[in-house]
Length: 336
Ligand code: CP3
Image (cartoon, rainbow, N blue to C red; front, side, top):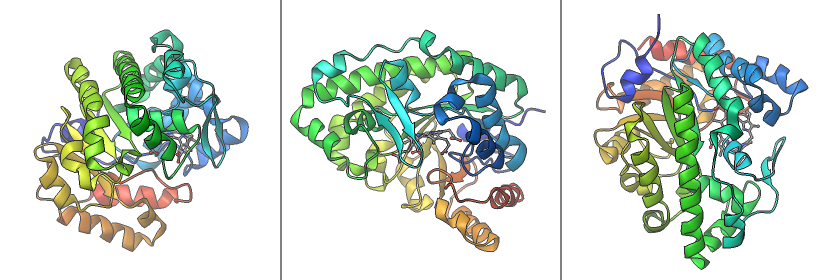
């Protein structure tokens, strides 16, 4: 029987048990994935439908989570737009010719579904197998722009901020081009069969709230509005967004994802009627099972209601996490 507790919770409806999934569940903490990685690099895995589907299915079978996430990466979109991207082990995405000017932005191709046929095939394979909903995703324009401008992962985002402040018109142009591409990319995933979408603005919390409002929010609002008619729940996720959460939530979506730097009770107050997803610190999974379970209980007791709550971490599963602890946590959550 199809388990739709995750979808019901996205719409704020009561569910027989609390749905749970984990960001980055289809990956580095799982033994089957690690075996596959001995033979294939990450981009090959994401671009080979049979293998990508196998990776997405592993956490469903092994952990018993209530939703699957497409095995893909946020950098597949810029690749489809013509950028050369390598994924380097233990570093992350490296972009050739990082963007420095308006001329560089003009070289980006609009996204065409024909340039990501493999993703459509992965979605179709997964829908045949799954008895839980499949989540599609994209990065938000700020997070994507940060990789395209920096050329590599950063923890200061100085090139990105400098570009934004020094070249506000080119910045708006880049946000516009990326937003159009994100809308087309997510629409393609929905047409192929994903049953929910999550937009990851993983790094936007590095901005001042007023700069978020000026340089980012209008573009994100446009993306969510464009996806409104698609009939699937839309999740807006970011980290470090506590100080801008009211603005961050001011988009037309069903679910807000938050990290552990804010109490769920306070987050819930700021986001209003929308459902909430989160927010255990992924580092909690490194502790004993007793501590993990009691940290979850603490989280749950802070929530005014269980309706509209999707249990998750506040960011991705850490590579050193034991899959047994994840499985036991899922059982614990389902027993609540
Ligand atoms: O973690 C997040 O903030 C979520 C958004 C995000 C993804 N990829 C989604 C993703 C971000 C910011 C990235 C960039 C990226 N891509 C990084 C992080 C670099 C940095 O700045 O810290 C890395 C290491 C990659 C490359 C990559 N993507 C690898 C090595 C893998 C495989 C498995 C893993 O988890 O290490 C991915 C897969 C990936 N990236 C998924 C998602 C949602 C699919 C797996 C899943 O969600 O279950």
